[in-house]
Image 1 (cartoon, rainbow, N blue to C red):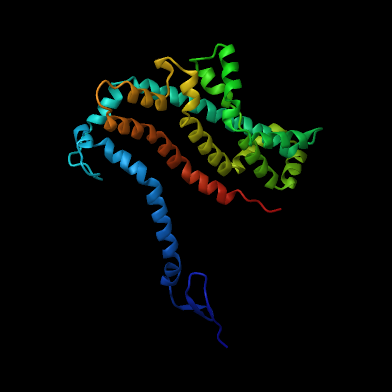
Image 2: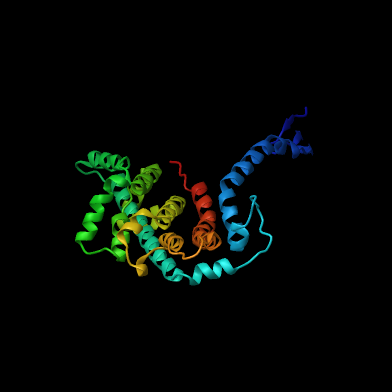
Length: 299
């Protein structure tokens, strides 16, 4: 008696042998989804594509066009030279890198430590404190902006890296995210580690953190993007050119032009600013996907 069936990949199986392969069936089912995703991705990426193309377009061609044009008639790197030399753009990038690096590192470390305490320890007021933490997520930054500014100003941290970073060293979202992941790990693993003589510090950094590489990569990207793209806070807390970040530098480059607004140079500066975010995503993408796929544990 022969058994006829279909395997997971669409092949027809008779007994224990595959005699007909139907790889096209899955492609037929998936191509509409792929087309929709490509269209959505193109629409989201369109402003970035336009900015990059404009960064290679001469100024006279940008301001002299009667009708919109997608590709430049003449490609040039002059806009990048202007953006890099007309202002201390390298200094702006260094300031942004220091600000973003400090905020990202401290947010990840502090979130891991606080999340581990909420997930693994029992102490009085734990539920109330965690509820207070979650409630803080509903408070908009604009509401805490003035108190933070007054505090930083009174401490004398205006135009300093402390003023740029200290108000953002902790993240309630990061604590919540890591706590949810830590609680998904079976408690038996913690008890086994304690029986073997492992301390909480050892268990956290040698077992839990390696298991949560996906969560660390995901939150690290969110934290990096949030810090790198800050505009309002650096604009208010810095009034010296030497402490401006890249985003603020582009804005003042726009204002301080003596001639017509050089949109080509501004787009070139914006393209330069986008490079670190793209590199951060490309570097963390593989670890992000791999970590999330391998992070689930079953008891």
